[in-house]
Length: 436
Image 1 (cartoon, rainbow, N blue to C red):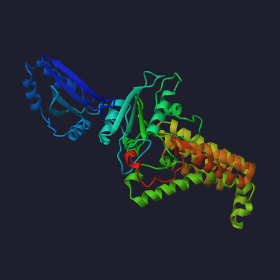
Image 2 (image 1 turned 45 degrees about the vertical axis):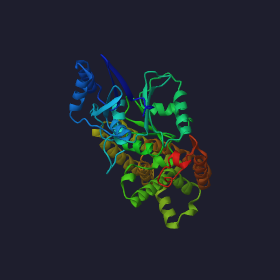
Image 3 (image 1 turned 45 degrees about the horizontal axis):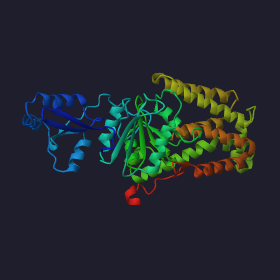
Image 4 (image 1 turned 120 degrees about the horizontal axis):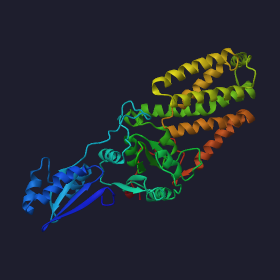
């Protein structure tokens, strides 16, 4: 506990009396401590009077073992010692002064609804309240290149890999750009070992329960003052494919949803490219009836299927961006109506085929199945890479591109861990002290 930067040991001297207070600054109310514990000491005429006062406080308790004392401190109580003799532990937990709002990006159906707030102390309080292990360590610091950017690093010292922790700290120290860090996304981009990689190596989340889950798996969490998002590192491919509802749902339900997301990811990457490859290079792969149906649908379209697909995908990207930037009250209505009008008008004008509308809709829907935005954005870009390769080399190019992607992800390392992992590793993490 002494390793945590929010653990305070406060010494008070009055006449011949020495009092020590032990508490966690991140979850205890400083004003309440000053009012109820500090000022009465200087108003007491002798040590016995102050001791009697402390023992008379409401909700004060006397713990009998160091383990119980540690547990009470973690839960927001202050330990009072007079002349190195334990007197009592007094509840001093402060209320959340900046109430966390509901999760808006990572919505859960059956899980907790709260997200982080923009106050670092409040977020530290939330994590301390949810993760009550005595091995949780908090290191609060400022970035060397940004002295006014305050961060807090969380990890379970009994579960974390020391090499991973050291690597993350080195990446934080390596940040040299003198710009104001205002969001977790900025910090993520600066600390990533491979800054220009398309696939994220750390995860940004707004959910305290996701951070707590990853802490219990031996990972490191970073919170930044002024942003309602936290950073979890290291992150593997599997982490970006799971939603918190998977943890709260039945085993087979969560497995089904996970497989469904992988199917959606596959459709998002390959469906548009597969259409171009079939219509432009390998129509013999289709059954005769389906080939004739597609050919009849494309008869009035005056340009190749690649242009048709690219046009509709770009229109869908514009609609997606518009839905994000528009006010919520009109965003969904405007983009829905715009999409319907655009699709109907483009089909009637002979600019795109009917089957192209179906394919683009499937691609858009499958893209939003991914629960984490960073991976969703990466796959939005990757499908254009697949489309370009398929346009040049046909179906064989699509197969080669997909194999190349798997090989790249297989070779990718993230703080010494294999990046490509499709499922959880035996469903648990083995602590270092047991694994050794």
